[in-house]
Structures are given as C-alpha cells and as structure tokens.
Length: 288
Image 1: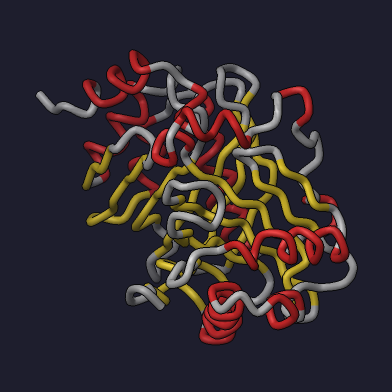
Image 2 (image 1 turned 90 degrees about the vertical axis):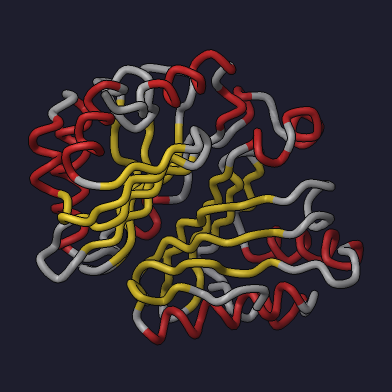
C-alpha cells in the first residue's frame, strides 16, 4: 500500500478483502484480481467515463488488455474503506499511467455476494484528472448506461444506513438545513471533492448546504437515491439528479456510535459544471 488505510469505519473482513483486491490489481495479477469477483452477477461501471462491463468475462478481457501496459511502479491503492462484507464505499487512488496519464482519485461503490465483488461502480472528478484527456476517454452522454446494476444487489446494506440516507436526502431535497444539523455529530466534517470544500461543525455545514441547495448535484428537488451501501458505522449512497448538469455521484458517510453523521464526503464529475459554478460554491463557503 502507498499510504496508511483508514479502516475506522470498516469491518476487519471487508478491509482484508479489499486490501487483497488492490494488492492483486497493483501487482498486475490478472487471475488473482479476477478471483475476487463473483461470476454472476458481475458488474463494473466507470460512472465518469461511461464504461460498462456487464459480465465477469468482459471484465477479464478489460484487465487483460490494460494491465500489461501499466508502468513499472504504478499502483491502485485504497485510502479509506467504509462498510462491511455486504457492501462498502472505498476511496482509492490510481497512479498515473493506469488509465491515461493523469492521477485518478476515486470513490467506489462495492457490493458483495458470498464474499466476492458482484458490483463495482467508480465515481471520480474529471477536472482533477484533466479535462482535455478526459474527453478522449469519455463516452457521449447518450451512450452511458441507464442502469448501474443496482437491481442485482438490492437490500445489501444496513437498515441503519438506509434510514440515515433516507432522512438526509429528504432534508437536502428541500434545503432543510435545520434537519441536516440535527443529523450531524458535534465534530462533523463535510467535504465536497470537486468543489474543494471542507467545512466543520453542524451549524456551518447545514448553513452551507442550505445556501447551495440549487447548485449541488446531491441537493435540491431533482435528487434521488440510486443505491445505499454499508453498515451501521460507515457506507453511503449513490445519488441521481435530474435538475442540473451532473446526473450522478456518490456520498460517503461515517456514523458515530449514536448514528450521527461524523463525516460526509461527496464525489462527482466536476467537469460537467462550468468554472463559474465552482467559484460560487467556493464563495458560499465563506462565513460571515
């Protein structure tokens, strides 16, 4: 591993399973990597590029094509894992050369069947990668998959996480900052990766979310839940949006022992919004 992995909101078994997956992947061990995927169902989707691999054999061909060309010393490694062996959100990094020349920092939605990966959907910010190179790899919007395989693994998360996500999304949809504040722990942290925003504390976080409800892709009237992941301590949800230029993304959630949100991390493709929108999101984080 390139860095210490934060396992604080993951069970030991899912931490071991995902660390093993990334070790095989970084070692360019094709068969070792594929042995950790379920034969059926098996779905891998890159939600930023629109790449859709709907079977174990398609994924095997994909890795067999790319792995031999990876540069010496390159790696794909986890940074933070949230969840259990039902489902998890994993934040990880692909070093330059794995897929294009840029570094990619991703948040993956991972569902398991019988201890094997049955579904993985990766979300990341195209601006961090580089908008010019992104255009060479990204499919046109009308060729993106309409179904992200969530129907094959429904119900694979904790009832606690499903309740927290339902209440959070309901409050964000109507810009109800007071309800959001009640859901946050006293030392809560909010992060929006594409907007480069980090805010601490329930009052400041809830005020910001209320003031940006019409701009953030996971807030406002057009937002919905695609799929909930994780345990009673960590996980999150994949979101959908019909009210703006960003149709999808993921939110990672860490919960404390009282089931309050202690960390909220949003990942979506910032290349889908213009510079002015990102500037407004930054400006509204300034407190007065």
